[in-house]
Structure formats: structure tokens, C-alpha cells
Figure 1: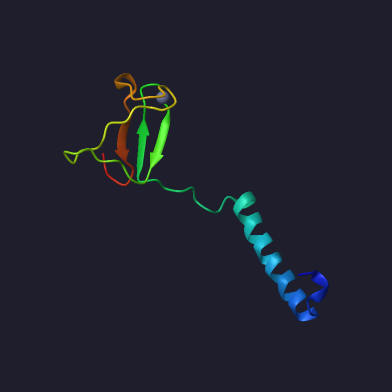
Figure 2: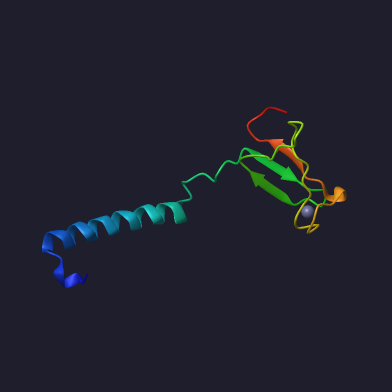
Length: 91
Ligand SMILES: [Zn+2]
């Protein structure tokens, strides 16, 4: 497909679409109108790294599965357990 196959009408529509997309992009990038994504859970490790999740893994007994900070320890390490907190919950 080549641009030369477009009719004048199609070209105008395309240009209008592009213009509106560009405006939306500019608003989002420059205006900062779009709020940052609100994650359901935030976790902090003892060293202060912050993790975000929408869901937490569950352990077999139904509790929150313990997770250590991947930045502090490549594998599971009890010294770097992440403390999870719901962001949409009081306290
Ligand atoms: Zn960490």
C-alpha cells in the first residue's frame, strides 16, 4: 500500500486522526493530566526498594506468599522480605 493510492478524502481523514492523536499525546506527555497508575499493593523491602502489584501471590494456607526483594537478593532471602500494603485501604 502506498500513499499515492489514497483519495483526497482519505488523506484528510488520516491527517485529522493523526493530529488528534498528536494532541492527545502532547497533553499526556507535557500536560501531565493523566494520573499515574494506581497499583493495588505497594511493597517495601528493608532497604527501601518499592515494588508495585495489582495482585499478590497466595500461599497454600491462604495468606500472602512471602516474597523477598529481587533487587537485594536474586533468590528468596528472609532478610529481605517485602512488606505489602494495600493502597486502597485505611491504615
Ligand atoms: Zn531491596
